[in-house]
Length: 178
Image (tube, rainbow, N blue to C red; front, top):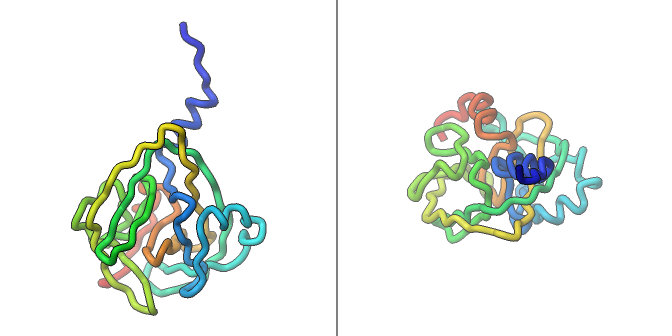
């Protein structure tokens, strides 16, 4: 019987479904202050307990509180390109608010799907142009944060949820007709 490294196996199982972003991803602390996820993690003792721009289930912009910032290692992620020329490196499980008025893992959305963006005090739909799977055999660090009230936050102005997709679907309410 081969030796089994259960700690490594559990880490792989846990991070395979991790909903996270790579370190260069910008997190909206507020409309005008964005910080790279890696820097946010490095300064997490400063940021945990501080406010972050969020949105509630009715689509109102609100202030929430950062509860935690986490880091994981993954071996695959997606490069998602949008119609405005922006792109994000994100794990397939991370829920984005989609045109179907629900949070959907980005890996389940395809080219042509639209996600909600909040920029310059206005909501708009942003079309996904391409989704490219990226393998990282050596592993790459990815990051996420948890908020205390809404469980929503913005990365590069796109509305995301900080729970796993199943939990995100249970928490959505209306985010009415945007």
